[in-house]
Length: 181
Length: 197
Image (cartoon, rainbow over all chains, first blue to last red; front, top):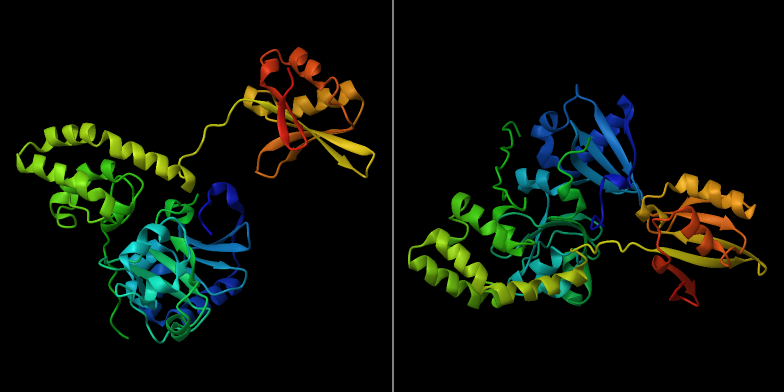
């Protein structure tokens, strides 16, 4: 979804009021309990939190001009890949096999066979409609952030079609937007 | 959890900005190679990517590096890889990664609305350095109708003029803006592009 994304897609950016800030903070820490200890570093209470509204009902949470989280409509907040690379343990991980990397990095959704094949790893605790980190066979870092379309069990059972929607991947528009000003 | 989560330091490639281990899947691995050799030799020992179609190419690299001319080998390999990289670039095009340059042309399209009324859309005037605001004013004056600058479907700006003015708009455009050649003006008829000249 960030395949074509640039500064032109930003329709408004506002510094949000304290109550909204609190709500964003709350939902992020609910979503990613692992981040609790670094929350104050990531979203310092003092520095202003900016919400950038973009096309397609997309919101970016920006602190000090660095995009940290994004969400769609009122969906769950997801970290950007740069943030996820720093704190890889905060999300559930799925791993795709080597053959899939090329396609994922071109923005393709993740198909079930790529997750169930010998190179892939499935976390059984993953439910449907949750954000997950997409790792790759033989690689250390995440290459994409996805939103599951079916639960891990279904992925295994059905083993066909799209298992995870590709939200954000390496070298897409959001990745290239290292700073926003 | 009292202990603070430690932020992981990730090595990002200085050329393509990807984490170093993903350079091989980046847009131009060849360009990253020198940087990788210098900064992340452990990620790609001897720079042997394992992807299937890269295999042959890299045997050459390896051999040359084995000969011990690092910089020279880089030059040599690029020349030897000429054919394969050419193939890659062609492959990349459908992915839309290589942007095509906009062709300089003016496209005129007539859109019928309400069966007997129509709007004439002029696209591409801005490519010739014509100010669209001026253009819409002039067109509106000349044809005594409403004319406005509208954002087109692909984020491009275009001029909409009310009424069917395709009969003498070509002359008007070439007269008013001499920098627009008649050969660069096209009509769209039945979904096909027809040169006006």
